[in-house]
Length: 481
Image (cartoon, rainbow, N blue to C red; front, side, top):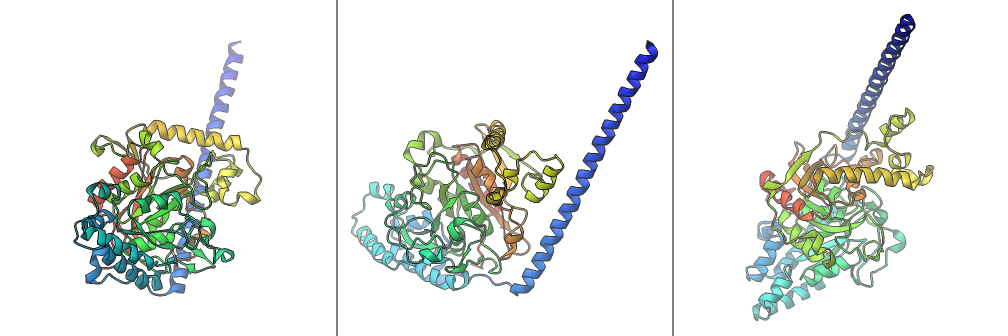
């Protein structure tokens, strides 16, 4: 009996040893395969960059500001204060901005419609009222951006202006009314000066269409501005727009903000009414789309968010509450792993190693692949949402990378279709995220990081963004001031 028991124990131990060796071998094989694929991808990116750099030739940046228009580099709230205190007129600001638009657009190709010269007449009326003391303190308070020019992307409706969505078939189509977010900014005193370039119907990572072509990066015109709020990123960074209103469904605010070295905030889903943003009614029962502000300065973001936010959400957003960033908890990750790379995830799926569904892996080409069951996707989203919410709670901040590289050359994103995943994960989770510039790399291209919080804690993202701006210097102009 003892002999039989010992044989069973030996067989069990051998089986355990064999299973352990098998597991170690599988882990080693997968890691080796992963590193081989990673090296192939790195080499592919290097070769792509070499070819495209040779193709595009020497680097060129946007024109510098002349000394008499240096005030265009100031923040929106500073410019509003200058107008209010009669140090600068709205007319001067609008005319200077229009001239700047015309100067840089030959290089950047960012404007679809505009600049709107009739904004000068609006500015003159504002200046006349200020000069005659006809604007009360209450009106100034209600209109914090009185006389300050701004822009928005072509896919967001502006009454009487082109609304092409980047499509040749819509080249002469105009909007009949303002989108809700545009109407709110106008009510706060903002003067719309232009609509800016996007990829067709916002559905690509690079701002390029057959209507006006590609928009160029002000730091290096050979490179992309991202998408889809790419025209906004280019104009704001080059001081041809004071601030802009973008939309974001998969990184469309944060990607251009990162590539163009400015701030961009993706609010909590539902914080801002999206009526008029790419045909949305603002009453959609479920959406990942948000509208949000883009600016050279972090301090502009909160005032703009207050203007655009749905009043019904104020009890949740608490935008007027003070934030002590010293009491927040901070988290970061060293890497995203391969959740975010479809090529590697596909290989993992085929070897039964992936935690993701095929639908998640091939989100970019889901029209030609067998559809995964919706309940599986919902369950993955729920688990990810639950984990992030549990970690961040009411006082946690996640510092999360934007991308694995700075602004790529034009066309390079055709070979890196998964790049937007670093932004889109937070659209899926409906949480707020702010892109914060962190200076320039050795090639003079913008660096940055995303500041992420749990839902309805936009105020925490924006407070941390201001602290990081103090520490790292924020926006660095693509020219010498």
